[in-house]
Image: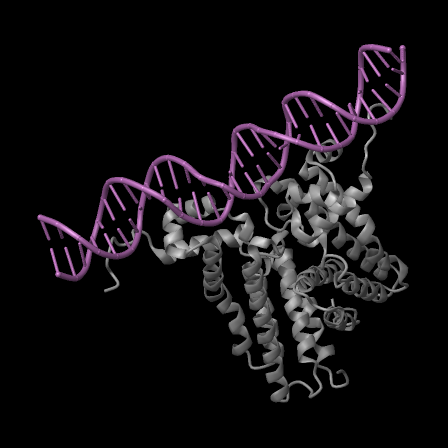
Length: 204
Length: 204
DNA sequence: TCTTTTCTGTGTTGATCGATACATAAATGA
DNA sequence: TCATTTATGTATCGATCAACACAGAAAAGA
């Protein structure tokens, strides 16, 4: 039924992963179709037949990235028993992942397309949506901390979530500048130093 | 002596400022020569005669940006009497500047060229150098705090400077996502909440 | 006035951009 | 065996990229 016609001679998922790695390293606009096809090991007609367009390929690549690279980092929020440990582990995993030298440094979602171009409007919108989802995930973990009594009732979940999301975004740029894992951990130390003040009983 | 030949019919500094604004909004690769010449009000031969190349124009534009847009923010480090107030004012001025709606959001130095391309190696190198200089400025202000007795002798000036520099970089991405000044101030609040822990007497 | 120098506008260069036309190859269904 | 369907490789499309050739225009120096 669905296996009519000449079968595909390449692994679609493997090609998608290589495209994702190239987008990760060079950004949406920086990765050309010629570079993509070379990295994917296919010719451009095969790319367009399998993925539709450069834009559609990028959107699929970011979804793949979210599943393959983001899961471990964000799972820290659910695994730790307290919000404090959850945020700290989340940042520590970020520091480790962003500084690995066997892959591009920093985050595809944060760095993939920061300059809104006429040809990349949907790309920017999609990445912004994913960043907003990340912010929501942090806020909901903090709200859980409030619900469980770990954090005071008046705790500014939204503001604190914004702070930690912003720190993680900054770590992407820091990693792109070649920062080591220990240098990124200095940022984590600074960010977590804020915790006891923010979570203190006499603070909003 | 130097006024031989046909005089230039455009204001070189005004053209440079418009080029800076376009690079600021769209990044180095995202701003094309055609868009630049339109924004600058000149034709491409005039651009090349006056500035040399797109790369040289960008380098000059970033220097202009540093002088015109960065001075007020970074002057906060010298104006405040204590390191704590210096950092806080520095971040507050950052929040206000990055969220202005009459100019591009975020920082040209942080966002101008994050993906190292074969054609933009010198650009990335220059922006990295400027970011490193900013980190140094923060560290030296903290070291002054140690010298003046405000901060303990074992204070990790380098690590804390890295933290605050990273926060500022993250604020550029946050601003690009449309964050308001008050949203950026939430990040400042979080970052400054770390201070009393970091500067406490029983912390390295 | 006349040469020299420098800038301006038009038009164009080869290279590269994202995306396809086309013919051929390899599978299934009849 | 043969029509149908889908994938592949070659070769190319018009558009845009950064950069420049060229000739005319506008200044200074002689």
